[in-house]
Image 1 (tube, rainbow, N blue to C red):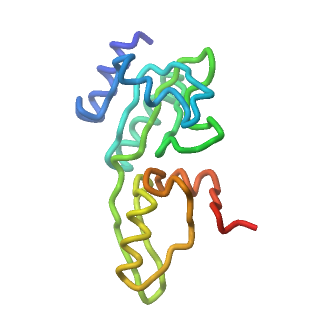
Image 2 (image 1 turned 180 degrees about the vertical axis):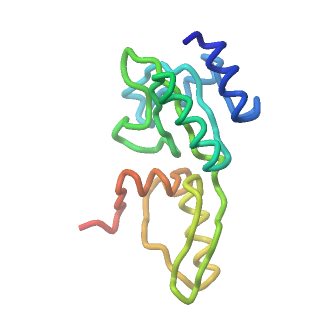
Length: 157
């Protein structure tokens, strides 16, 4: 599928300000945190809702377009960037950053995947609760990436 047609179809799902397709602007998302992997993607799309994520994935599946999920892109594994020699789209979840529920009685929090770890820790601390994950990238890492990679941080034995 041609890039312009792809972008036009994705614009039916999200607003124009939620897609980056300019190669210069894409470079930030195409490389890993350490700069070991620097590949190419067709675009980065920033959904704001789970419904948009679902529509994006259904469209990509139907058109056989590969998708790279990306959170804060602070991982040291290179898993959140496009593959070498392949053209994929990146679905970056940082605009899905709402804290949906804090249940103090059951010590439960429900958040979207784009919540920054430091923000999460601050919010629960204000409720006299504690979220134990501690990472050096806590100011930029997103909880969705932390969970999906089973990030343990400095508290892991």
